[in-house]
Amino acid sequence: MNVNRVDPSFLVGVMHINREPWVSIVRDGQIPTWPLQTHKKFEVIYFHGTLSRFSWESNKIIEKLRWNLGRNASYAISYFLMLIFSPWRSSVPKTVDSIIEKSGVSYRAKHVKIPEMTSTIRWKKIAMLNHFLESSKAEYLLITNSSSLVNFDAIANWLDARHNPKVPLYAGPIHDGYDGKFVSGSFTLLNRLAVELLFKERKLLPLHVMDDIGFGTAFSKLSVAPIEIESLIISSEGDLDRYSDSELRKACHFRLKSGNLSARNDVIIAKKLIQRLEYL
Image 1 (tube, rainbow, N blue to C red):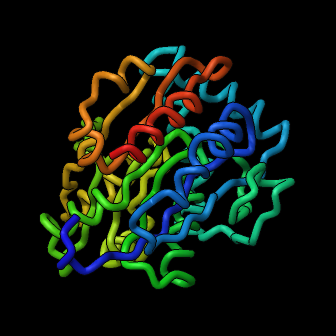
Image 2: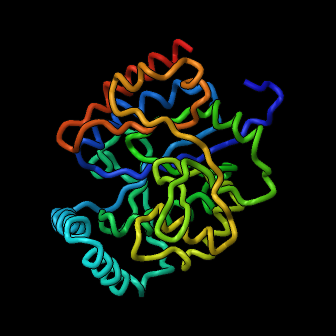
C-alpha cells in the first residue's frame, strides 16, 4: 500500500435482484467481505427493481426469444423494445429506501420503481447515477453485481498510479461490442466527472442493447475512451488455487462465475477467496 496516496472515497452500487441464487450469494458470499476491507472510505447500496411474477415470467420469455431465435429475430425483439420504451428514454425512475422483505438482504438497499427485467436495467443504472450525484459525496461510483468481490486497496493503488482526476474516468474489464468497446457491467468504475457527463447526456444510452454495452456506446459518443482494469474470473475452486498470492493481492475485481442458476458454487469460492485474502 502506498502510504502517501490520497485515499479515494467510493459509492458502491450493486445491481441486485431479490431472487435465488443471487440473494444467497450476496448474503453469504459478498456482504461478509465489506467489513474486511482495509480501505474503509466506501459505502455500499443494493439497487433492485420491482419484482413481480408477471415481470419475471415476461423477462424469461423475452430473453429466451432474444437469444434462441437467431440474429434477425434478436434484432427484431430489441428494436420492438426500443419502440416501446422510447417515450421514457431520458426518464429518471423514482427511488426509495427499501426493506429486507423487498430487497432480500439485510443491508442498505434502494428500490427503483421499475419492473425487474433485463430490458429495464438501463433505468436502474440511471437511478444509480442520479443517487450518486444528488445524495453521495464520494469521488467515485463503482457499479458491480451480486457475484463480484472487490479489493478497494488495489483499486486505490490503481487510481493513484494511473488516473488523472481532471478527466472523466470510465474503467474496468474491457470487451468488444457490436459498435465498439465497452466496460463489463460486473465492474464499472466512474469518477464524478464521468457520472455528471453521462447523466446529463443519458439520452445517448441506447434502448435496444444490454446496459453495459449501452454505457460503452454513450461514452464513445462523448469521446470518453474506456480504460482497462483487469478482472480475475474464478469459475471453480481449482481456478482460485491456480492464482498466485501476488495476483490476488493486486487484483481489483474478482468475478465469480460458477455453474448455472440452479447450481451456483459462488459462495464456497467466495469464502475460500476471503481466506486467501485475509492470509495476504
